[in-house]
Length: 164
Image (spheres, rainbow, N blue to C red):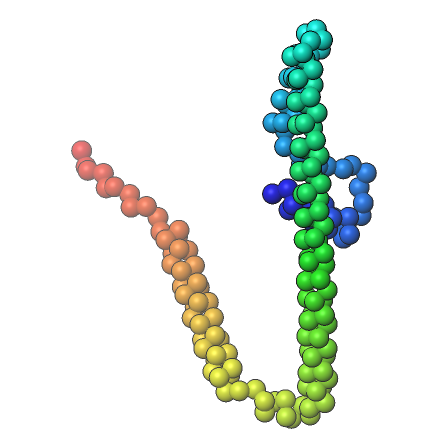
């Protein structure tokens, strides 16, 4: 998870404008333990136990620093791999776009008559079916509107009164 953050922050620096704020992901549990121990040391007196706790704090701090260095090294390696992959992808996209441009130029050179003949009959059949569907939908919508208008025009049936 930590390496994803570093890759994201690296990409932000490369692609997006640099912001003034910096963020880091650091495991908080070792730091919380160190803070508690420091509080105990500050409250207590200097003794053999205090020195042992200070040494333990220094060791914990060194482990955290070592882990951050290891993670940073791994992140830099992965960013290098990512850079190579992005360069490769850009090359493939450029190649694809050049092929699209060549195909577009070839189509422009065709005569308009050839272009009209190039439309396959399947496309024409699909267009005819689509036109029929649209017409039937429109007719059914008009019929529904007329039916609802007729219902609105009906007056409620008045009950007959009996002669007294």
